[in-house]
Length: 41
Image (cartoon, rainbow, N blue to C red; front, top):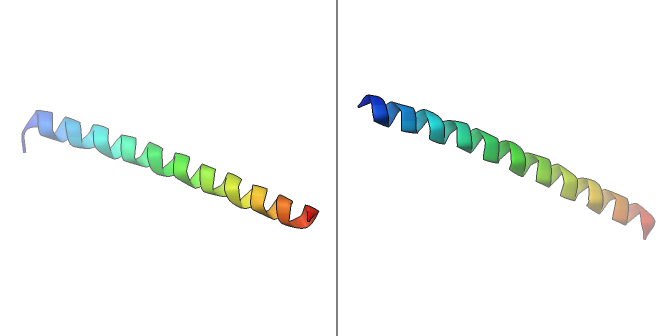
């Protein structure tokens, strides 16, 4: 593996981790909203 490939892989892994965190946060927000709406109806 070339140095450039390793750097690109590291950047993609960091981006993937960031996106996974964002997805988890959004899923938590949706679950919270669903719970709140369920209690109000």
